[in-house]
Image (cartoon, rainbow, N blue to C red; front, side, top):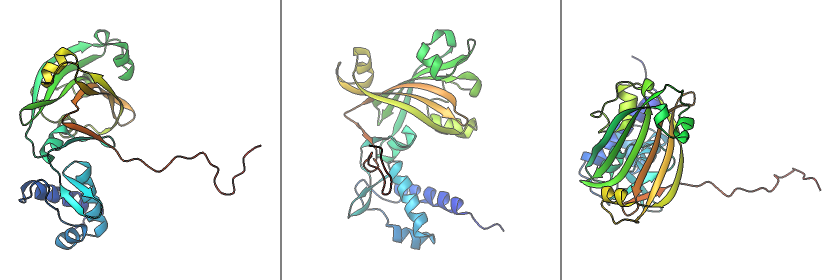
Length: 256
């Protein structure tokens, strides 16, 4: 029998811990298992335990509190700027029921989209795309309005039914695509009357607009996206590195 690899042990542990958060009797604000407790209970190294805990923090299931430990997260919906994470998983992690309304689903050609989209997706003149609009719900309330253009030839069996769930899971599990990342631009906007009505807020309310291009391996674009987030229920989160300095390293000389 082959000995389990470190990666397979970590992945299995991650699944077990995520189920424990969801179905282990924890409520928002409860302290979760410590790194030492996980290592002892699941017979894994503390390095593996820490890695699994860190991933659950990244996915929004848990949060670290300095000097206190790891706790089950409450009802905050967050956007992690370092990783692509499914809205469905984020909503569940916040204790909310995710939902999706598909407002538009149609086929377009490259000539029917803007130059920015054609350039971002590296489209040929005869390229076809799927275009859809989705409203993402948390406990029945609209929190995200999304417009997305997807290259047809990379997932030709896309339907209005199968875009009602997590696109990331759909692309990786059904279509076998490897999503390697996305380029994003984020800016503040005032919502139009139509956008505000969809998100159930007042016109001219501040929102956050994310414009992104998603990629497969080999720098192949898959989607172009324009997504609006309600700022009263979403927070954007990131961790910055240390100070960037232009001072020369020790032993390095500068020209005078």
